[in-house]
Amino acid sequence: MAYQLVYFPGPGRADIIKLIAEHCAIPYEFKSISFEDGSWTSTQPNTRYGQLPSLKVDEDFTLYQTIPIARFLAKQANFHPTDERNQAILEECVSAIDELTNHVIRIVYFTSEDKKEEERVKFQNGWLKLIMKGLNSHLIKNNGNLVPGGLSWADLYLYDLLSYLDLYRFEVVVDDSKLETLKANVLKSERVKAYLESPRNLKKH
Ligand SMILES: N[C@@H](CCC(=O)N[C@@H](CS)C(=O)NCC(=O)O)C(=O)O
Image 1 (spheres, rainbow, N blue to C red):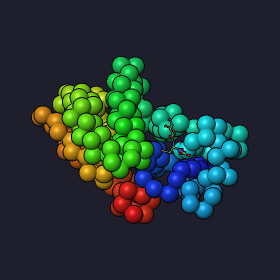
Image 2: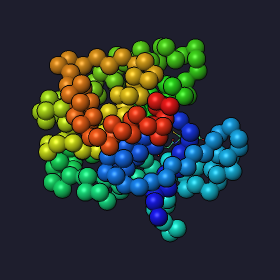
Image 3: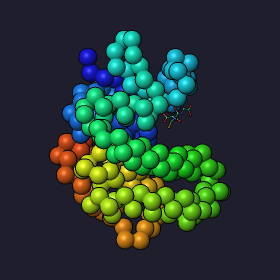
Image 4: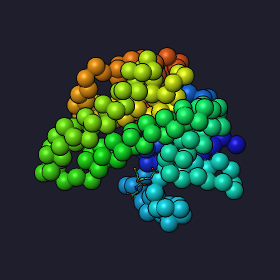
């Protein structure tokens, strides 16, 4: 049985899960739950935390929370570092990227229109700059990857965040930026490239 990934019909937290599944050629089915037609209202009480995404692995095992789902899939496909220090670096980067993702979602979806611009500028000049500087320091050390040893799912997550920032017109300013190298490294994955061009990529379609 292919894993069933459940999320809303747009770009968001499920995208890193899709990127990992696509890169690792893990079969999955995407089930979209709409807000508009009342599907979410009827589905929400049956979710563990009242939130999506979720990943149904089999009848007895459904997992919630984006990062644990991502880690589970990466481990299944041996796409998780084996070295303890590299695992720790990956977790550090994923937490930093997750923090930025939460800011973006807060500003884009949960900030009133009259406050949006102010919040965007505050974020761009504040946490976005500081946290990107930290992430970029890893990219500098590892030739455009976050973790020593080549492409990891932290790179996919950073790629995903950069696409999100681009989609919503956030400006990313980093000295000695290696973000373009990171993007090029991710796009070396033919399966990721094919996914990004496909209708499965809801940032594009
Ligand atoms: N920490 C959770 C957060 C999940 C979350 O906030 N999901 C949002 C969509 S991005 C949701 O399900 N919202 C339901 C609602 O607003 O009713 C995770 O990473 O999975």
